[in-house]
Length: 458
Image (cartoon, rainbow, N blue to C red):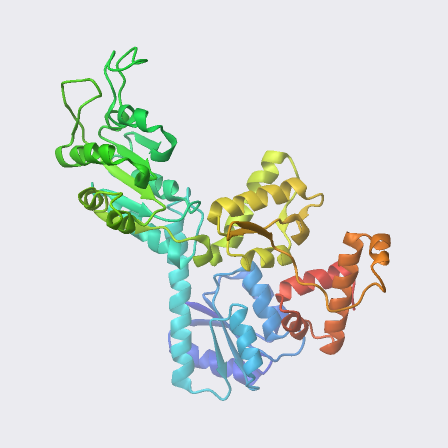
């Protein structure tokens, strides 16, 4: 039975919602405030949280942030008698499923709750699907769609053409297709078409016989013979020369290969998965890629999204790489600071997952504490042929009287003092409201809370 926790400091509202939801078939528990709600969440798995915003003690927005920190997939619906557009925007930006104002229409809140429960159920199903693909890190809807497509096409012998920018993990997707296929026990043989000289490509793909050219001191099997009954993965397929394209087309049409210098053809039964970071339709129009080969390869086209289109996976990937390189380097770097994560979430990652891995690897190598801080992250975007470092915006507060004092303080001390003054000023302006201060400084509540504790402010 779907379990819902209602959080409100007004007993009449708790009782009303409990009666309403029990009649709808839900299992309902109540809490009189944020602290009690968190205790119950740790003791019992809920499918949905319904919380008032304005409550004594821990408010609803602070409760929302804490829930999203510990249980990011748990849907939360916010309700309040004080309809504030700012509160609504802040709640939605920080992960609330929806926002309902009191007094609310019964049919309206029933509809919102039904949708939120469905979303929670979908999130659980998504996690179940992603668990079937341990080689690929991702739980975003974009990746769930990829996983669902893999499940459908893997059991067929259809050739697959994987599109995607460099660094998106196209080979991992190809491996996943093979692992879920009916030939998973057979070989998965990869080859990168751009990495092999043109004069050797034919031999690498189709093999050769002894003496067919200088250096051919024995017979050699090519990619398709090695992958017989299994899967051949052709990465960067757009780099093949016209002559090799013609010979590859024959393999796809006739299911046979003839080694270089040989006279006997060999039958092969190979599932071909190709990948490219080029737009092959444009290559066809430019006369660099055969249209008939394209249609043979792209029986099932599959696009892997760039990381900027699935930002929800950045924390998951960053944590994975953090653990990987902490162990590899023998360091005790255990977590990312919330501000460092915020920097990553605002970055576009032109190099995709590969660039994120490089950033985290470098961060672990440079970090001297047990937590990754923003200053350990080096982000760069390659645009217009230039490398531009990502720099945090300058503080509006004057910390030193003149430039000479900069060298007396040192960069780290200056940055810390500037950050501390910004935080103190924001808290003063908002009457010590951490929620409003976070909004004023355009940082997450978690980031502000961490820094306030770090600098012992207030």
